Each structure stands twice: as structure tokens, then as C-alpha cells.
Image 1 (tube, helix red, strand yellow):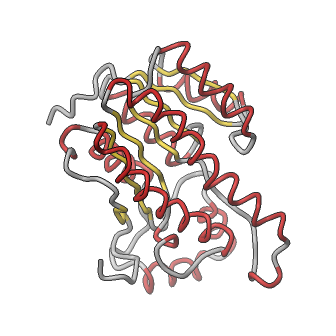
Image 2: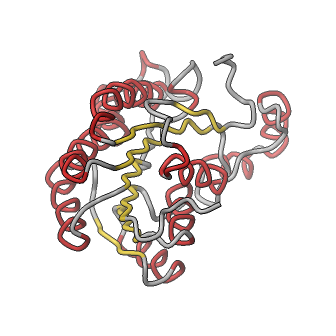
Length: 253
């Protein structure tokens, strides 16, 4: 199937590992011009070496608004415009809501929510001019239902809501905005890998009980959905939040 992504200019946040790296690899295979951003230059350089010359790297701390602007402007200066934005960067650190310091709530919102909102607004300015574009926000099934860390879930819930609001606003310009809500995904730097090493039997029981498919998902399975959503084959999908979770979520929609 030709997804017509050859030559498209793609920016992926959190592109140096895990889901972001898998998405970058998938777009490279489709012939896209791929830009990835992350905080650690060494990790970005390793991905560029692995994936080849069609990948451009931009070091930035996307929790910082000035660095977001600088990074985005550098992408535009290199490629002229942007066709696809993947807001993938995310994560948080917290415990119970009543025991979590306010700084952690602010940090989680900046990383998971405000960075995506800001970059989306910057991208829309250019996409409107060409009357086309795709923005994909990587959220979580726990942005749609209870579970997981409170700071992360709050931020991802907000991002899912923003996705729908922006989608309805910009679709008249040919810009589609959607989100992917992964379930539990296993990769070499994931928290799940650490938990497996610490408690293999406990995690085996978790998978058996909580994931009907009987295994963790892979970054590549998220990347495949991102490719489809970014392509013309998904032209009638607007403002959607798509679970990619092996049946893990409890909701029936």
C-alpha cells in the first residue's frame, strides 16, 4: 500500500528512543524527510547513525518554550515547511495525588501537554498556508480512563481534549489532528523493562490479568498506526483518539 509519505517533512518529539525512534524509523522507510528532537545530543546522533542520512537531529528541551521555538524554527529553515508533526515526548514522576508536590504536576503538564499545544500551534501556522497537514499526539489509554500515575494521566487527558478541539478548528484548512492512545508498551528504555527485571513473576501476572492479547505491545505497533494516521488513507479520521493496546483498556468505545 502506497501511503504517499515520500518526501513529506516530519517532526517527531522524543525521537531518540522507544516509540519515537520506532516512528522515525517507519517514516524513513516510507521515504519521508524526518526530523527528531530530544534533550540528549548523543542519543540523537546514535539514532541518526542507525537510520541514515534522511534523518535530521535537533537538540532541545521541549519543556522550555524558548527552546521549542528555536528548535521549530531550525526545522523550518532547513525544510521550508512541515507536513507532519508527531508530539510523542512524554513521561512523569508522581505517587498519590495528595502526596505529590505541585512542582511535579507542573512539570508533567509542561512535558506532556504544553509542549504539544505549543508545537501544534506553530505547525498550524505553516500547514494553513499549504492547506494540508497532519498532527498526531501520542497520549495513553490512561488519558481516557483511570490508572497509572496521576500527573501523567491528567496531562494526557488534557491532550486528548486538546486534540479534538484543535481538530475541529483546523480541518477546514485540510489539517487533520488525531491522537494515539497506547497501552503498555515494552522497549529497552521503558519502565516496564525495569519492572520485569525487578519482579518478573509479578509482571507476568499483570500481563495475564490486564492485557487480553497476553503480551506487551511494541513501539513498531504504535509506529504503524502513526504512519496510517499521517497518510491520505486516513483522510476521514479527524479528532479521533485511537487505542492501540491489545485490548488492555476497559472502555467499550
